[in-house]
Length: 115
Image (cartoon, rainbow, N blue to C red; front, side):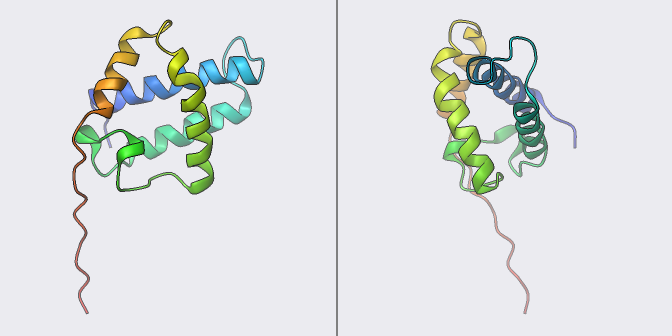
């Protein structure tokens, strides 16, 4: 499924946050460690499968949980740490991320099961 601008920006944001987190927690000064690279790959795959695509809200406000519970906790830890530190190296991504958190949350249409 092709990604649009919104999803590509979201992928860049999570990659930038993971780079900051990995640099400070795993002493990686170029690239990501294996653990963080795996989390980035997982996040990208989940974004590609997001049912809302270009109208998606910030993941923490979404009613559909695309991430497994353990991965969601890992991403939360990364965002809690790297979010405030993203402002200086990536001011535009930070601004867009703030705007995206204010997006209205679309309702997920569930399909009625036939009996």
